[in-house]
Length: 286
Image 1 (cartoon, rainbow, N blue to C red):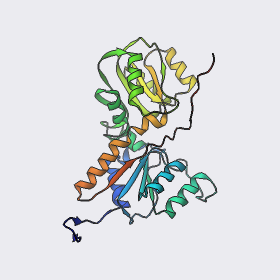
Image 2: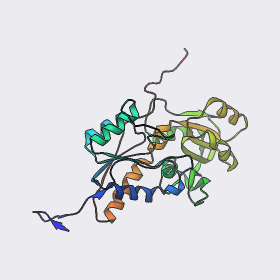
Image 3: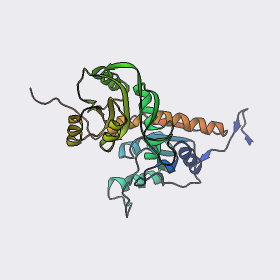
Image 4: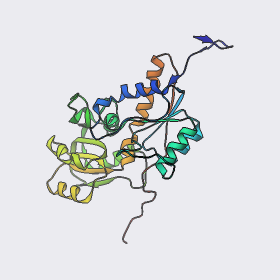
């Protein structure tokens, strides 16, 4: 360890590869769904990293923020190319993001369903925002049944659906679409299932485990109406961005702590850029 002219020791910075290892320790790749993409998207594993920016989506506004902050690495929840690509030419927004990041010397990595499923990940963070106790996975992972997609747990005391919805709306970061409520607003509820991001595919699972309410996002008309015709759980539908953003502050804290445990310093910033596609909500009708 070298010494500066002052009294504080100077340590070697983490590398891109080091930060990726910390990320994968927090969100183990083996927990990811088989259709998913997680890992290093662009960047040199040997380059130093002192600062990272965490965001939900690798979009232009996030790249703007990363360059403006002068960070060394961006970690997003969503992959840049979920379905793969055969080019990264700067002829479309995704390609331009890659070129801008490389020119600025900024690496890009992501942890998607691996972070959704992990201990302390998106599902746990969303459950904590709701105030759930005794949580367990909604859909346990075959790799580790103690982890998995979604969580189910109990509220400290029964409440009305409308009151739970008000608490959830206040606990989520703000975005234009807000929170939708499906079911009887005055129904008594206590057992709550949650899953950040698109939750159509988990409606049956939430019913099977006996949830009174299912909080998720991106619910489509027909799956939601057909589900509600069959009874509980009632539905709370937030936005994809808001229900997944809640997993970023805990991840930032874990990365900083893990770096500190290794005698290194890492500053992790959480982007507050709202990357929901909707910028304005207007009430319809008279």
